[in-house]
Image 1 (tube, helix red, strand yellow):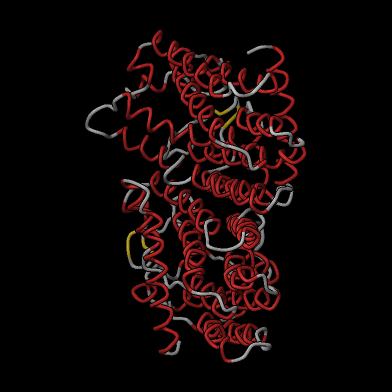
Image 2 (tube, rainbow over the protein chains, first blue to last red; image 1 turned 45 degrees about the vertical axis):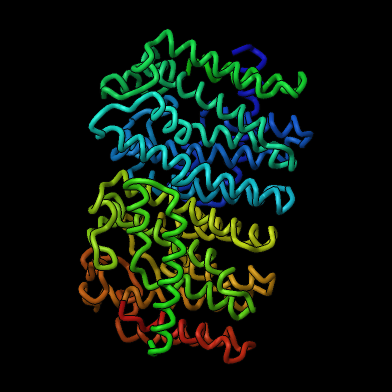
Length: 289
Length: 289
């Protein structure tokens, strides 16, 4: 990604993490420590989409920060539970031990649970109209729940023991829920905060999400654990049906780039003030971690 | 409990469970089955408190049903995660295998996660003003999260490895969060839906919650697994500091009854239309399961 975007994303991420640590401050003991550990060190792509889509709608960053913090809390909870021994069984996340390795499984379950509740607390206490808060909270609940992210995770688990590998269309549908739903929500958050039209942002988020997932598969196939901060080569070792396994490296890479351009095109009605979102879509498709 | 109350609670619980199964209907596969399994068969005390406090405020049951369904979804999620091997490691719940025994641990983690999201979806899509929905959702997030229920669960875990057993005051504070927060929220839900004064209902819910927890300790000490539908005698086997261990059976029983009367007294401003809530407090203190 360009130097400008990298710098802006890192700075935004630092502000969002500070807001999150403040929100966690009311909790105590290992639970609070594990929650803080879980939200630290991410790229902050989802928060960046929230902040940039809010800025595009003329909202002050102070108003958007708790909403950006909410999506990072929700994303962090999903990673903590996904890393559990009964799920992906990962020891490493963002270059550090996962929560259940650093503490224990019970603390990881509870820290994830508390982070999910915190996400709703943050969205519903934002300095916005009640109507906007309900819109954000309800769409977040749907994006996160059984027909969204968690539904996608469950489908991913079921695929591991399915009698035949998933087709491309099935993988797309699964990933649209598993990782796409939260990215879509993040992209549309600014429009929801401002009571604007969410449709171009949902289209943008959908394409960005698909590009992001292909990039994830590419990183797992080609990436370096030291660079990505997590284990790589796991998909192939498990014989998992991924975009890379089905399309091959080159076609997968091309597809990710096309999807990024599809995301960019969804914002054609906007001027240069949408450039950070355009860059973010290209970053999502070609990221190195 | 009196025959009238028992019948009304069972009937209300059946209507709430039907509403919950409808809400789960959008999900698929083992995830949906596990969610349905988890919400079936409870006493429905929390839902009953929501419905009765709503009725007391003149709200139609149809309006209150999704809110009652929400608290049962949230309660069910907490039980599914609490039963996991890394937490209480229970095989039996409500007289049936726990979710991780019937399916597997990953499905239990995900079903719990999805039920928490569903609780917020239900509250935020209720047929109420945006302001009331925000009030219900935000207070639910706080009651459920790191400073409420999950905070209490984490404190309970920490107590197991603490160098000295908890004092009575520490147990009270822990239980007020672990089980009290959701019962308080349930009792105050009607006032929140109607924009009324929540204070008497919070006082009622707080005392009822404390009585409920002592009754829980009494059931564990004296109860029969076939009657309660879950394992008993676990607290003593673990040397856990409970109200019964600290006060003895007789004093614990007296304290539960006093707390129930404290809950009843909190509703002194209301007439006979609050009688079901008064009976529910006495039931919570002397229940047999």
